[in-house]
Image 1 (spheres, rainbow, N blue to C red):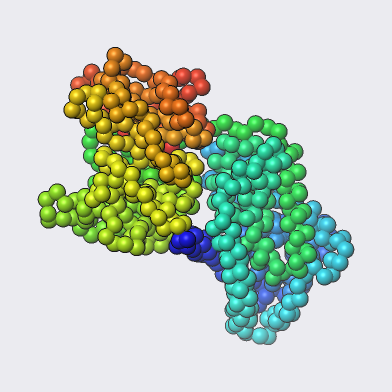
Image 2 (cartoon, one colour; image 1 turned 30 degrees about the vertical axis):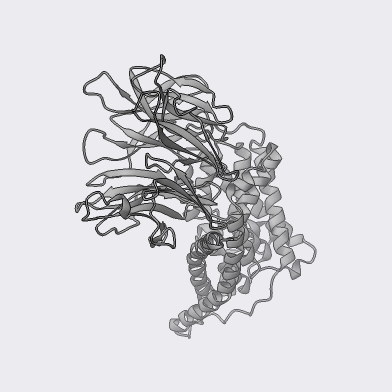
Amino acid sequence: MNLAEPLTLFAARFLDVLLGAAPFLLFGALAAGLIEGLLSRDDLARLIPRRTLPAALAGSVLGLILPVGEYGVIPVTRALLRQGMPLPAAVAFLLAGPVINSLALAGTYVALRDHDPSLLALRAAVALVAAVLIGVLAAFAPGRERWLRPTPPADSPPTPDAPSRSGLRRALAASGREIALLGRYLLIAALLAAGVGAILAPDDFESLAEGWVGAALALQARAYALPGGTPADAFAARDLTETFARGAVLAFLAFGAMLDLTGTVLLLSVVQRRAALALVALALLISGLAGVITGGDAAPRARLPRAVFIAPADAYPRNLVVADLETGAVTPLTAAAHGIEDFAPSPDGTQIAYTQNNDDGTADIWVVDVADGGARPLTRCVRALCMAPAWHPDGTRVAYQRQEFSTAPGDAARATRAWVVDVSTAQSALLFADAQLLGADPAWSPDRRRVAVYDARAGAIRVHDLLDGSAVLLTSEPGETGLFAPDGERLIYPVLVRGALGQEFYAHLMLADLSAQTEVSLSGEPDAPVDDGFAAWSPDGTRLVVARRYLDERYTAGKQLYTLDVATGEATPLLVDAAYTHAAPQWDASGRFVLYQRFALAETDAQPEVWVLDTHTGEARMLAQNAFLPAWLP
């Protein structure tokens, strides 16, 4: 069994958790040091009341004064407890601090402002209510005197006669102690989170969502087991609103922000295990009930998706443009001076990897943030064309093809190999350990088990099994890798055939079942009068939308759109207009909308157009003129 893939995934997840939490802990440790070195117990007593309810209320909004982030509340709480902070205030701050602070509120607003901005207020309200309630309950809990872990007493605060420098020294010493202690907890948390992340994916939790209770619990489990951070889970919630009830998404947002797996491990530096379990259980219960009250039975919000494409088609430079089907807004995303060639949205839709041309004739892979348009290079390809980016399903890596400049005529294909780049570090490496293996147009399977490339030397698609190290060759002449099914077990790919048009070649679609090791034609016998082009899987993996041209009495000059039943091969017309040829069809995640491009055959000055078809109503509408190569933003 090949362990390289799961180990790589584990390492990437470990670093993601470690690097994501470390800045918050560092910031919190510095703040904790200043509190311990410069704030006296009397000062704290004047700021935070001693009575239970006022103390809990004060702790719940303390993040507005101390915006140290989700994990930064841990060292700050430790320091405040040493200075005499009441237990209700400490518990309330631990739970509400990650949500009710300026950084988290701003990040959540950016993520949800164009989708459901009311979730921002609801999330803050649920966190506030939950923090206060749990803080009050903590004050009356049996054995509450044993909730907190023993901590060394704080150093004496500076006196009027002591120089301020001594207070700063104490602050730095206290910060150092916090970093040393919490660093150990963070390593344990990162190892646990990496192990869970290597085994489970978000879809594993979402597949368990049945009914309101099941959906809420599944999303809460995902938020806890796969921590992404307060702004990141808000971006995830933006997409979840299209599938799940609003109340279930609120439960996901509120619970994950208050406590997750990483935060729970760090919490054990403050409270005993029994107290930590009680906090997790109560936060789970209250956030779930809040979801029921705010719309547990409501249908999911049917927000129209977004699309991205390249424009203009008739001039250079060409760049990425985003179209929002909900608002109708069409917004340029990139401004590459020499244009771009192709692109691939990330699995979560927050980033797009694309090929950018350079002024010396080379090309590099870049990545752009969809929210703010910030772009950065991932590769530095010297005397090479780096293109055809393909995201790994976990969103941490991008595979691409690198074509070395060659002095030998006709040798370009033989100089093309598959590489992979880490999105966070921009470090590239060959996709395969064997440097002799050629590979173009890489594609990952959605189940993470396989990766496919086109091998020009073999004239075939090479499918590598990353678990057992085996490889399968699928003979294919057009030079395209094909497309994995949603289950990752099947692959459709084109082959050239002839017979219906004498000696003229045309394309058929083949279906390879990689588990059963079988191959069948979806277009019929080699002489079947069918010329199949672009195709895309439906979300459930039972159908294809294909750009097809019949070569018999049903002949059209351009390709039309059909749905193809994968089990039976039966084709059903989806969009037939003989005045146009159609290409690049793509189903959206709901299976309702089909994105495509079309081109008017009889118009001398025609340019490609991007359209979307509602398969429920049959209504088609144009998104953009003079544009091509559309794709959905997840």
